[in-house]
Length: 146
Image (cartoon, one colour):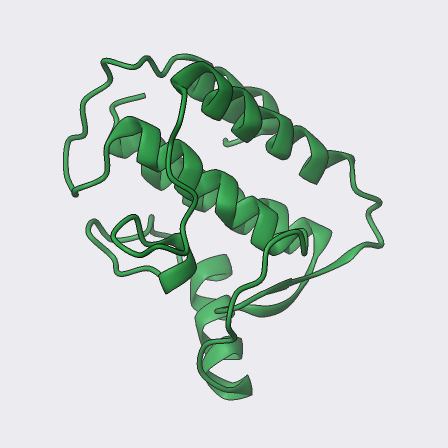
């Protein structure tokens, strides 16, 4: 199970030498990619809405209730794409990892009644945002073997 404690421990196991098993991102890019995703969900970074109400509903249902991890090499939104200028670029591994850990903690500390928004999945409850974030983080932590 991907609880906050297990996700946090896995993030802490990353090192600057962690090598990807698939994809193109470096470990530093993965940290800032995941941090940006959390900032978008918590409304701290803007992202353009994708699709329409029907596609957002369908994507959210598949992501939340399909019993499978995200596919490898799945395309992302421009705001989270390391090849686009919209994504935050890594600066310092230790600081970037600390930022991601702080954002994970902040997401879990939000009130349970907090409503959040996602550019692909639309409106989310805090529980849905936590679950989707854990699925996303698990995907990238597996990408780097932790």
